[in-house]
Amino acid sequence: MDFLRALNIGLFALATAACASKITSLLPPPEPALPEPMVEYRHAPCKPNAKEAALAGLLLKSPLQKRPALRCNGVLETFARQRALDMSQRGYVSHRTPEGLYVNDLLREHYPLPRFYLKRGNQVEAIAAGLTDPDAVWQAWLESHDAHREHVLGDEASYREQDEYGIGYVYNPEGSHGDYWVLILARRAQPDDPHLLCPPPPGACIRLD
Image (cartoon, rainbow, N blue to C red; front, side, top):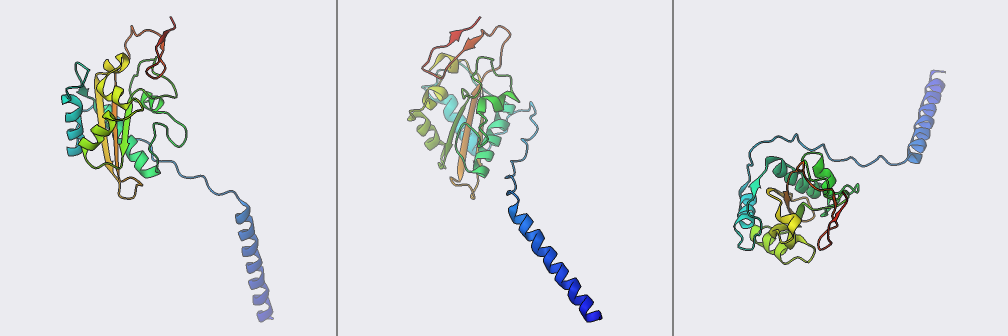
């Protein structure tokens, strides 16, 4: 009798496990985990690493630079590093995240961009990946045909008034490109900013007020 009881208990346990396995197989796969929230943004002095400092030197000392003055901003530096880290960890190189969020909108959470900077757009970021040397990154931007040159040199009027920057460099051996670079150039919103609708250069801004 004890043998039959133990046999019945064992058969019931096997049936229960099989049923649970079948139910589990019918459930949708779990959602992929999103990256950890960005670190807290503090208005602290910039602390560039060696490669970030080298790229900053090229930005500031280029004879082609049209901006009259540029200063490093700790919030922009932190943002640039977080952008580089996110791209390295999630396998993309774009001004838009895999969720469809654009860099202008991401930065507005931490820095007061002018209201005429496009929603769902980019007027602040230059990116590069797969290049180990700051000189190679700078040259790639100067030779680009997707507005990076105009942006980093301030060739266009709305870029030229950007007076703050932050640079982020991340090396991730597990990332598809290894080296990831982000340069953020921006300016703070001002009370007397006109209400403009500004398409990406070379399009002309339209005054709305």
